[in-house]
Length: 119
Image (cartoon, rainbow, N blue to C red; front, side, top):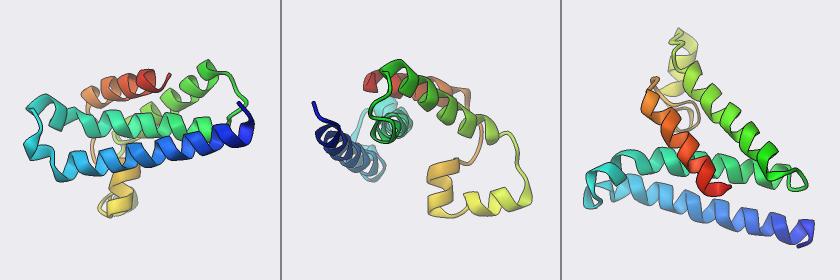
């Protein structure tokens, strides 16, 4: 598959995952508890994987997976720091979506699952 077609595929998949993520938040009450609880984090990590796949479309899958895991785990671990400025950023919608709010070990598991789904 050519690089241009591969990137278009990645963009399409990113769009689908974003829509699913929004739906998982908006309609989470209609989903079984475990799916409602963890699907957003899994989908976020899958989107991260697809985003890095888009950016580094010529790179091996294991490289993209490793970069995605380092990035997503790094974001989660950074939530252990609760400085004044970073918390102001986290209070915005975009800041919360990108940086999260507080560290949860379960998020590390969800991110790993999301990236493995992408692989």
